[in-house]
Image (cartoon, rainbow, N blue to C red):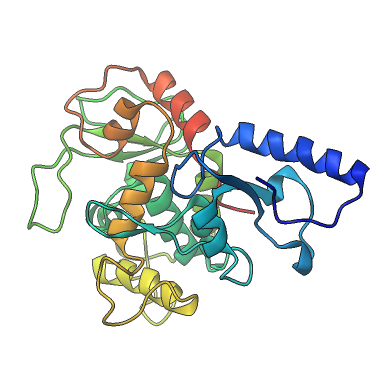
Length: 292
């Protein structure tokens, strides 16, 4: 199948065929939005009519259905498929990348990128403190059940809470890797974080200056930015809107590394069979980049 551009010289056509094959190879000959492997097109994320270029970074492999949906939006963002199991909207990586890059406030961007790149729950995120962050040697008190990390991590403690509690169950104390992209967002936020009376990580920077940002505040941040770009509509329901649960499912389905590492990060493992170095390596090699 051909890509977006049709008016090319013979030489240009040869270059395009080479780029197309490279992009398909990078994407494992699968649609990056739904995983289908048949009837693939190579799509320009930013259309050529809007200044997009024939470069690998501007190309993605899409099945014919997702390609058609992509061209329904002005800059090639795909609203996404509904999962057959629960009809919940699940954004593509490109859609999530585009959405996050519309958010510029350090606190708001940190919230959505933590959710998208770790899959942790809103309750856990709202409970994180500065003491739960390990960025360099020293200064972090650890429980006796975990080994001192040698790489940047969030420390999330085991919790017995489960369905109905509003907090996801976590089966063991977990180190959630902080990759370079997430670390950069974290450092930018910490540079403006108010000096409050609490050691909560997320503190308000507006009218609620210095107050902890709770579950409602996190959900408001997601809803506010989702409404701006048409990803949240009042009354549409949780299965059709961008909600915290969608971020967790996004991480669950888009993470391409070891399933055991993914489940450990999500809190589904009682014990991790890999050492920290292996977890970090798997995470860094398998996590998606979300910032331009």
